[in-house]
Image 1 (cartoon, helix red, strand yellow):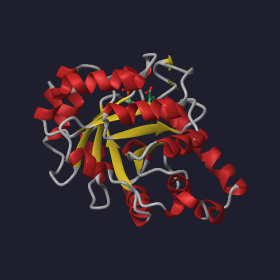
Image 2: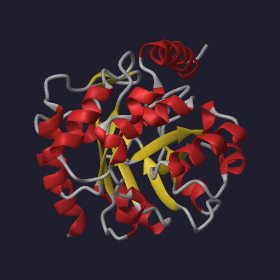
Image 3: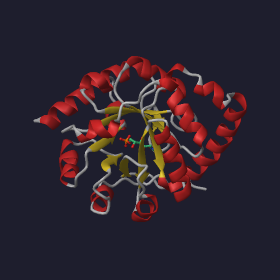
Length: 261
Ligand SMILES: O=C(O)c1ccccc1NCC(=O)[C@H](O)[C@H](O)COP(=O)(O)O
């Protein structure tokens, strides 16, 4: 069993338990459930820098990255830096995140928030909305085409943007459908952890123009972004490069300043 299979197996158990403990009606009665979402796709389309900065305490590939920061400070720092949106990892077991992180970030900032999660069930989309997300992530490697369709349509019905993540052409071909807003190419193979920005470059021309293109993972250099912009990428998801510093907001601000030069 690879790491992705393990994460998904644990996630199925976690979601089944949560469904017993917290009914959908309770999630739907959250004040945030009525909130109008802010579109990350629109922000990226209008931006020259396109940074989506991630809150990431630890990961299966890197172990501990930074466990000592307050998520609200990180969110305010990122917003002040001028990022287009923030990705909040909500998986506990493998990334040290939680839905409370999402809720706390929501209380601190106005910018679009992506619930970064291994979504396999419509229940998690209702949770995302109830805890203040604007965007959900769907990972093609763990979903069938029918699942991508029903989950993305459920998200769109709640006003959420959908970022669909792929890592190869097969995942792209099975996923193309109108209920997606953004196509994200993960430069990290989630089964082996190998990272290559060439994956984004190779897949770029195969992604239809009507989707906002996002390059995810392994990005730490200004030059990498400038190169990827030549391949029509509008969004750049960066986690470790900011989170490994003592002040992720300041690090993002310096990075965006250099990108604008
Ligand atoms: O980051 C991991 O080790 C990982 C392992 C298994 C599944 C997902 C994983 N990461 C999720 C992400 O997509 C990244 O956190 C995100 O793209 C930011 O990546 P980075 O800038 O390299 O921290």
